Length: 80
Image (tube, rainbow, N blue to C red; front, side, top):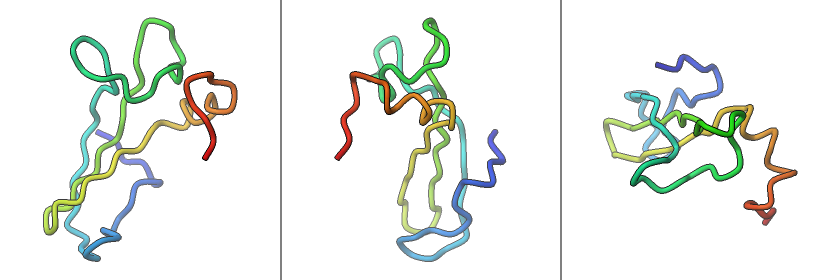
């Protein structure tokens, strides 16, 4: 499990601190690819940190820093 200091410690929706986290694969097999072209290895997909508020149910996903570093050179992503 992730203990990343970058993950939220309070829900920005209901302000609860009753948060839980887990790591999930960002795609592959029958799952949609949530981070296309952002893997550091051609044969693997990055993991996402998922944070779930036990009070209101708000769910957030966070990509790893290694994936964020590839955003500007990826042809699958465009800046808003």
